[in-house]
Image (cartoon, rainbow, N blue to C red; front, top):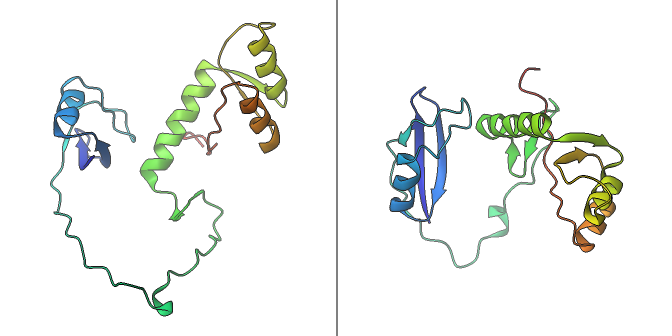
Length: 157
């Protein structure tokens, strides 16, 4: 895998991982890489500093242990390692907009509607809604493909 810092023609910076440089070139030339901020497909590699590996100590001292994450007072969405980067937030907002545009909202009836579609009792289509962790797990055990998405605030407020 290779990691590149990328930049779109609107000067938004972001990064991406690719199988190798040839895979990146193929996707780039085919305009198949989109900027997560503005959606532009005019993307090129940005200047990057080389990654230099540091020697690791055999066993870290107890005082070298990472500090536990601190909660954010602002209530802003968080990634596993801290505040969610703006580029990730923009990508999730675009994903939410696409789901809302192309799928039917079924609310709390999500699990039952997914089962009806799976049994052929209802038209197969994209749906979204709410369900519990247990129900989502039960759907997967029944062979029904579901995905849980982080539902961030809309981009337009």
